[in-house]
Length: 106
Image 1: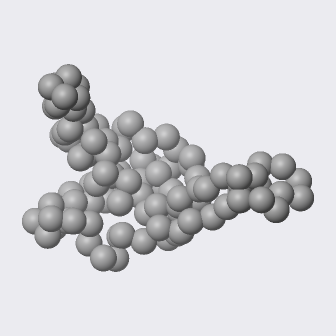
Image 2: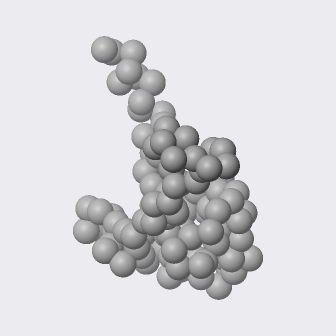
Image 3: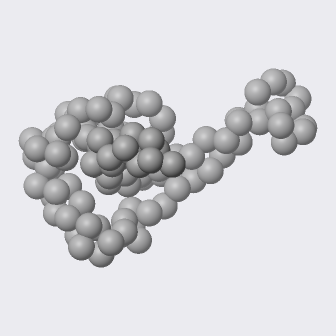
């Protein structure tokens, strides 16, 4: 199943997320929640975009060094909801076989 492949490609507890449900939670509870996740992903596909409730991302700046004041001394981190990450991973997996052909045609 395409959804399970996307989930298996995601690392556990890579970063905290806005709703506090990490990929580790999704991996551990997958057998119980996979049908609901599938319904959400399918609803997003039919809506032609991620549902509003799952399309929330927190941006934060992490200093690269102590006392950083200049914007170039920070790196940006985007904390996305796991459902949003699953949707984008499925899209990425679908596009991966096509992208090399598109790029080579230019």
